Length: 142
Image 1 (cartoon, rainbow, N blue to C red):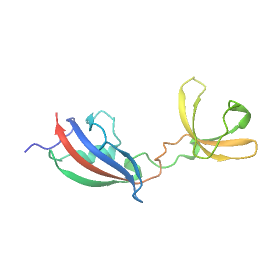
Image 2: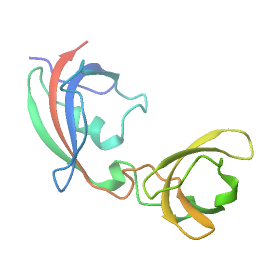
Image 3: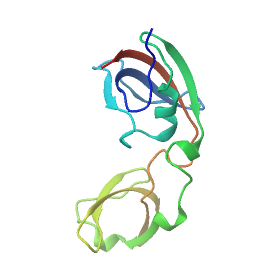
Image 4: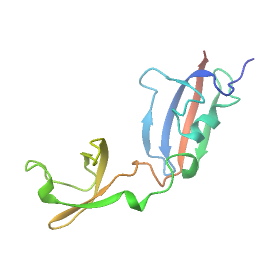
């Protein structure tokens, strides 16, 4: 029976959860994820969890934040004036916003805090600082 090895292309069903059990993503209601390993498309812990799995095998893995989206980077927080926002936007904590940096590249932010005249934006990945749990089912090795 063949098992997943580095640089294989695989199809996998997954359910991603926080350590408190809250589900943040799942492929169960759609096609399985098809991905080529070794291409940097997956967080390192997810890819490592697939190695040595056999077709139809199921397992649950826990990925430390260092092997997922890393620690929260305080330098990715920034304060901006509410006056910099379009007039029709009323910022709320948790709201997603898109901004552009000096080079014109777009970046995703979440509103971390709303103050009287300013807001604090968080440019970290929403799952930064979190250990993650994934239920995996290997569907196919291509």
